Length: 275
Ligand SMILES: C[S@@+](CC[C@H](N)C(=O)[O-])C[C@H]1O[C@@H](n2cnc3c(N)ncnc32)[C@H](O)[C@@H]1O
Image 1 (spheres, rainbow, N blue to C red):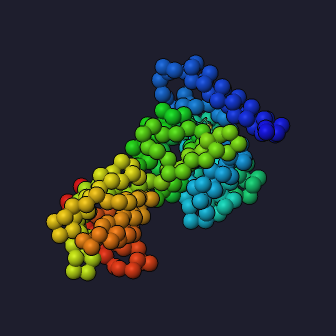
Image 2: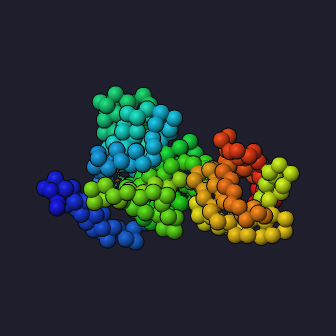
Image 3: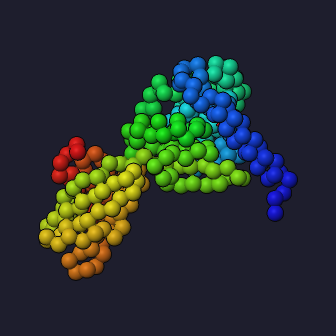
């Protein structure tokens, strides 16, 4: 049963989508420029902001970048959780309002708002990127997001990113939120030393999705499980005895090391470093 409050939230969400679609229709074909916003200002409801920050696990160690920061509410919420960061916003009135809102909330020292085009903003320091941007903008940003450090969390309100499936998706009172975790790059061939044994692992990678084979003593067997979450890898290889063995490791460039809690210590090296 829909209670009146839910109805009101659902109606707001439909209204926001309608505002965006009519704006998109009116602006289709318009050239992207620093004076043309890529999406009009539609604030994310506070409840959705909290769930986005929760989904991304924002905490004191995080540096959050909000792309198209509106009135600053996402970053202010992040700062209340102890995070630092900045927002970029093309509309100078919203930048002014965000700075005032941050001061009022008592978090003005940890965050800042810059009037800038998000396409001209370096995302390098981010551990979390927040967005409420249309799908075509998310798609344009995709290559730059994938260059961020493995484990960087990207959280989006309402809109997905073509081709890259989210690691998590949640519905908050009728609106979708998405989380992607930037995956380490593991495609290619690795040699793993486990005691006096040598195992070859061959991975094919589509974003965080992995398939592959292991080779032990010249015998090639498809990997039963191969999972990647940021820099954390889990693979299940079949030993010569037929018994499955789970390997969990941390990817660091061209090296993968067994996690500290692994029973057996191992190290895997990429066959063609930098590939
Ligand atoms: C849908 S609103 C979201 C606002 C805020 N992030 C929130 O969730 O409440 C998108 C915001 O992005 C801003 N924006 C659009 N294109 C931009 C661009 N190229 N660079 C920076 N900001 C932009 C708009 O002015 C608007 O405030």
